[in-house]
Image 1: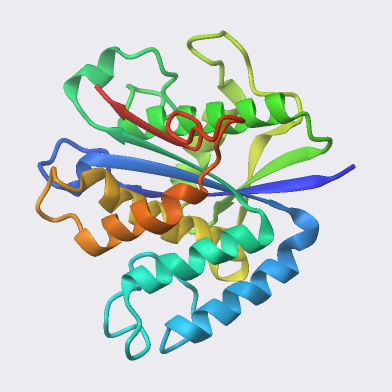
Image 2 (image 1 turned 90 degrees about the vertical axis):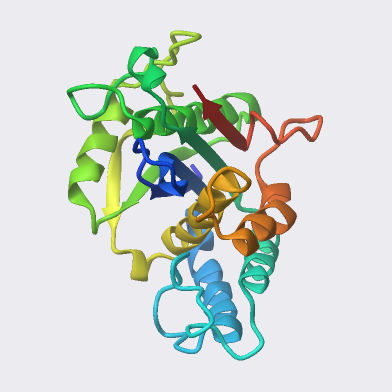
Length: 249
């Protein structure tokens, strides 16, 4: 039976601020577990092209001019990542939620045990996309979810969301092929976590572009041009609502 791993990383704060951190972005990158070493090799090659210190992990926040090789831009990082996604047939989903007071009356299940936050909505939307993909593509195998071990509190919150998940619209639980708990790993050891980190960071800036002044315009445009077209789509080629879900209350 085939085993698939969905690496999850997030960006933003989902707080009531007039800055890009008003958004919370959750990203899932699905790979066949047997392809991990090949993907890790490709990521190392990408880092050698892009980073001055290629032996360090790749993160969305580590794309400043001082960290990139001479002549390499933030757009180049997105372009290289886009080629890696295509080369290895990675499945990518991004859910972005803009905080507002209306979020408190939404139907999503809170993972924090107190009240609903933007992160709860984005996480539920991400799980909905992944579960729906498995249901409609009928690919044999199990899907495990992997989180960056560096944030154990959020890992606990998200794990609770997974175990309690029920789609608020269809009343369906997660597809039976999804393992209903969250695993964890160190991001510098897992290529999938590094890829998800960069995508979520660029997607955060794309979400806030033309809304907040602190959005990184280069990252926003690079996401739209190079990464967005690689997100999961339906049989008609539609990405919006499938691989990309933005929720504005």
